[in-house]
Length: 94
Image 1: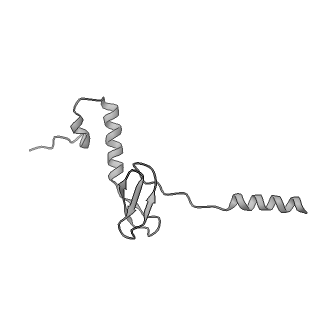
Image 2 (image 1 turned 90 degrees about the vertical axis):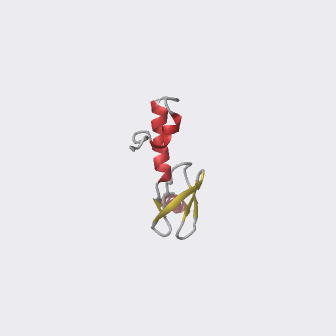
């Protein structure tokens, strides 16, 4: 037998309802949601989604908060703002 949901994937249950654009968006989100991501702590591709906005690394068991469907790691903390403000205050004092 052939696969019945080759094009529509997990949105096959919707049938002809809701329109093609919405079904494609849901399919795209669903495929992204199931992907595993790289862990910022241990650098392995083991991050999986546990709940809406909650992701967990299956290797180091670290829990992260991120977007509702896709994991986006937080940007690294930079200290350029603090050093620029400190430099301006020391220049004003002298």
